[in-house]
Amino acid sequence: MYIRRILTEKLYKLVESFPAVVISGARQVGKSTLLQNTLGMDTEIVVFDPVIDIQNARQDPELFLNNHPPPLILDEIQYAPELVASIKRRIDLNRTPGQYILTGSQQWGVMKSMSESLAGRAVFLDLYSFCLAEISQRDFIVPWIARWLDSPEPFLAMSQSRLTHKITLYEQLWRGFLPEAQFLAAEVIPDFLSAYQRTYIERDVRLLAEVSDSQLFGRFLQLVSGLTAQEINFSQLGRELGLTPQTAQRWLDILKATFQWFAIPAYSGNLTKRVSGKSKGYIADTGLTCLTQAISTPKAVGGHPLWGAMFETAVATELKKQAAFLSPMPVFYHWRAYSGAEVDILLEYNGVFHPIEIKAKTNPSRRDTMGISAFRKQYPQLNISPGLVVAPCSGIVQLSELDYAVPWDLS
Image (cartoon, rainbow, N blue to C red; front, side, top):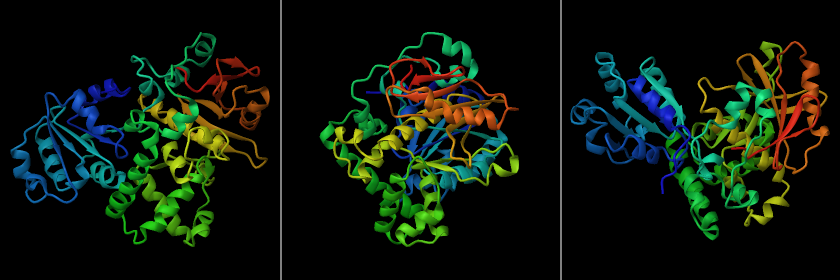
């Protein structure tokens, strides 16, 4: 069963405006399914393989493209990078929109070569795993994060509805958000995630970088999953496994390159210090955290020491997915003062800063807004919107003069 993605309309607009569109994202997030159900009925699709040279595309890219005129969808283009130069030459001769739609699962394999070779010729779209609205199969509406960023006060003053769920919050985090995981029986979810992890490590990682000890890399993935929603300390990561900080950073770059992990940089009012603070890292899918931490049932999620970190991870990834709807996307930061006060996520959009705290509790209180208040005091010169405490609560509740609790599953 196909579920309409919230980026569908954005994809159509990009195809209508640019000669080439590059869709990138993790393995099995639905890139091929999206194209098959939107553009595939009128467009030829060629899927490349890491071993087999499909129709001699790598050996003779010009001949391949001669036999496959546009519009053309090239799936997993990182396995046939030789085509990129030929595509560039053809676009230079003909700038007609919608000629080539390319997909890939590796940022290094796709984004680097595409951004260099197709600069000014291609536009890029990141596709993530399902957001909550897609899982709930809600008819298309503008994501709530976009409505809040556009007009915070009117958004909070209006009545907002929540999404309906077929499963509990614990089970959703346990399953994760990969499309296939939403339709499988609960008893086979660990098998699915284990196969996903094994395929990822044994195929993608070895193709992308020289990692001789796959078992050690698997332990590294387990460690990183357990440290989700924390500031990144490369020395700590390396020390735990007997790796140098440089190796730990390189391996973390591999996780990022294959869309299994992302980082949010630290914010500072001093522009030179924005990059000097520690970034905050998140595993891309909570299901992978549950697998690597041997959480065998949804009920075990609520009592696990990582419950709060997993909920924060789920909210952070949800915000990333919804923000992808916007052009341009808001800039993501986190903030932590030397005193210990912190704001989990800080969105900068149209010159306004939007602070967000994430709490894994059903009844947030004024105390949960202390980090946001500290941020306002630290930067009185900034234009700061009303703050949010995103939680598994039942409705929007005002917690202080300027801050509100909102359900994480607003529609």
